[in-house]
Length: 166
Ligand code: SF4
Image (cartoon, rainbow, N blue to C red; front, side, top):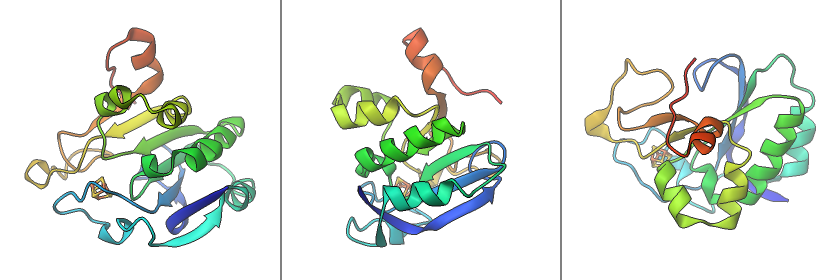
């Protein structure tokens, strides 16, 4: 399956979630947050095209990672391809973190089958737009205080938002 990326995979990141992580930089974002650090990731036709098969072959060669983090751009712009990659990562087994400009409530309300399928493969969702006025450099794994680090599995189980705890 085709997918557009903004940059090649980053290995061994320690700033995009807990532990050593591989980061997938998806291309395309419609949120246009003021102060976004990655405006080059916004055009839906920007970046470069590759395939989920190629990414999975590369992931098979990467060792000692705790998980994968989908960033961007907004991974929810390409839910089918991201679902396929996330599903493979769970077999490694790696955990799956996803950054999105949508809120968790937005995603549930939309009830888009492709988004729901992607959400089923997400362990932790860092949600909501970056808000410049709420920027806080002391926060771990998020840029502004409105963004939440949500334990998706526990939130589904409890039918209310449960924050991830380290
Ligand atoms: S959601 Fe993320 S990538 Fe998109 S504009 Fe906001 S900060 Fe930038």
